[in-house]
Image (cartoon, rainbow, N blue to C red; front, side, top):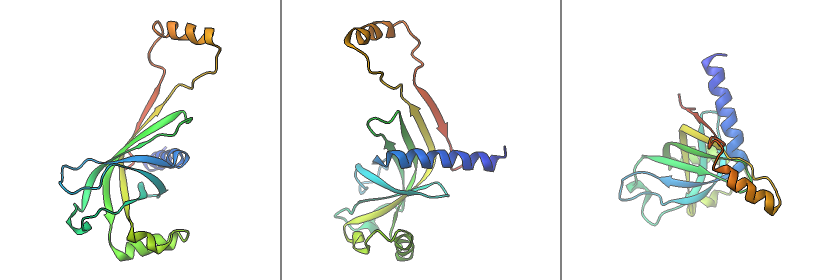
Length: 168
C-alpha cells in the first residue's frame, strides 16, 4: 500500500469516527490574551484535506484582534460509543467573505445570518488519538462484584489506542 493510500485510509477512518460522534469540546490552547473560549461544538464536516469545520459563538471583541492561527485540541466523546478521540492541530477563524460564501454554497441548509452570532472555524488535524474503551457488559450484581475483584489481577491493557498523523 502506498503512503498516499495509507493516508487516505487513515483520513477516511477519522472522518467516519468524527461523524459518528458529531460533537466535541473545543480547546483553544493559545497563550494569547484574546482567544476563543472552551466550548462544545458540533462538527459540520471533515473535508478531504483533513480540516474539521464547526461554528463557535462569536466573541464580544472584534475578531481582527485575535490570532490568525492558533493551537487547538478537540475531544470527541459520546456516551454509549466504545471509543473517544483527541484531535490536535491548528485552527483558523474564517473571516474571508469569499471562503464564508463558498462554505454556504456547499452547505445550503445553513442560513447566512448565522455569521452575525457565530464564527466559522476550521482545524487542520495534525494528530489524532483514538482510544477504544472496553464495553461494559450487563451483568448481575454478583458477577459485577466478581469482575471488580478479579480486575486487580488482570492485565490493565484492556483499552486500545491508535495514533494517526493525517497532516503528514
